[in-house]
Image (tube, rainbow, N blue to C red):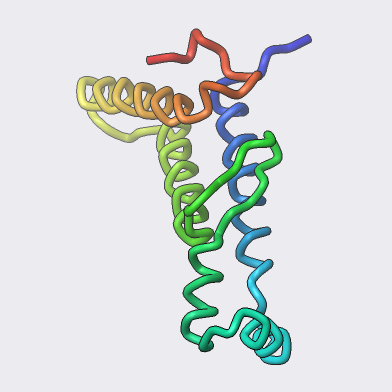
Length: 130
């Protein structure tokens, strides 16, 4: 069986994070009647209810772990930033050789550092550790 590359591993984890964040974002009540029902049930003002939904941003991640207290918008922004770093890592750099080599080394280290956040995942390869 072919082993997953570091980039494939990161892309899969980022996709999982993105799906979890989107699920949380879509779970907040937006229908005014539903909001009113929750407001009556909880006895809170609309502003308090909105704040509660924002704080509640917790999702069961596909790996079985919990993302607690992470704003879905922040998680989605982090997914975008990680993809940008991966994109730079994979890009052909039109720079002088010495400068390109230094940047490529830095990006290689950065991509390995991104993977550290998933080091407890069963597909993480210890050879990727910076």
